[in-house]
Image (tube, rainbow, N blue to C red; front, side, top):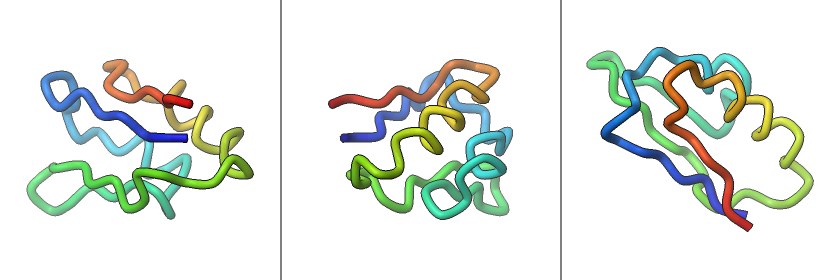
Length: 63
């Protein structure tokens, strides 16, 4: 599985970080960083919740 970020949409609001802090981090300047772009399948439920929580639809899961 792969986490894909649409950087043209991401506003650094941090909902993804709130839902899955071990995979996402919003820096002090508001940039969202993916900490693990290729997480294991066992994290799909948690990551799907983070994707669904993004208010600007900047995240998707592939695979």
